[in-house]
Each structure stands twice: as structure tokens, then as C-alpha cells.
Image (cartoon, rainbow, N blue to C red; front, side):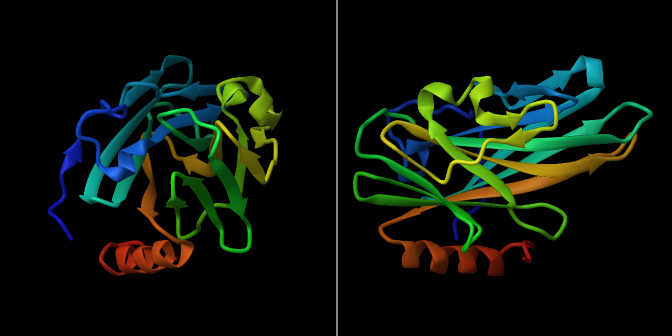
Length: 208
């Protein structure tokens, strides 16, 4: 694998893009009935909740983007939150297919003969809550079955311009920081993606 190189921006320019940059990663957080997205930034302060969210992205391979999401609780109370991760293509087109696979516990995107795998890890477990939505509803309350409870509206597949979203439940103790990791892998087929993910897990601290 290549040496780790920290990516400085969530939204890279279209010039000199690596294949993985075609699929955009937009992190977010749900807390106490409110949803916040980190667009064009790698850090967000939620003042009312005394929370700070930071994202570090690493391009560890031309086909693999590895992201770490940190949430720091500066309050005196336990915080029950959900880390959100939205993925959608940079260029909107009609030949895209986005779907979640409960059998594999993965999210897949397909476009222009390229396949993308999305997975995540927190506290020794993987993704359990995910959905796919038309892109025009992605940043609205229509993604929620219940925003008060932080429950995503389940839709297994979306064609055309679409986004996938997963939510990872997290408990953050007072004056502590919790970390979730997520990764995106691109290739030409599902079997190639699974093999690359196995190699990634073998060469990192991820153990699922």
C-alpha cells in the first residue's frame, strides 16, 4: 500500500481526480432530534450540545479512501448520537445504481462501469442502519422515518441521481472522544471489491 497521505478537503476539484474521488463522502451527525451535515469542511462545533466533530481522510491507495470520524463530548452528560455518512456521485447522471445489501452488510454504488463498496466500523461492529435516496431528497427531512428518534427511512435501492446514507449509533461519555472509521473502495466488480476489503482489513487495525 502507498504511504498514508492526509486529504485536506472533503470536496476535491474535478481536476486530476483519482477514481475514488468520483464518489463524494459527506459526514454528518444526528443528536437529540437534529441533523447536521459537514459540507465543504472537516470540523463542526455543535454548541448547544457541546460536541465537536472532526473528520480525517486518508488516501491509502488510489482505489481506497479511508476516513476517521471523531466526536468529542465537552459536556458533563453522556451523549447518545448517530454518526451519518452520505455518499453520492460528483457528476449527476442517469446511469447510476445505488443499493444496500443487508446480506453482505455493505453499500454499493455503480456508475460508468465502475463499482464502489462502502463499509464502516465502530466498537467492534459494522453497519446496521442504511438507506438509499434520490439525490434531491438527500439533504432534507425525507431521509428520516423518524428524525426525533434518529431512524432512517429504509429504501434498499435507487436509480439515477441518488445518495446512500448510513447511520452508526454511538455513545460518547462526558469529556471523552469516540471514533468511527469508514472506507470506500472502487473497482470493476463486486468480487474485486471484497478481495480489496479483505486486504485492507488485514493491513489495518480493523477487525470485524
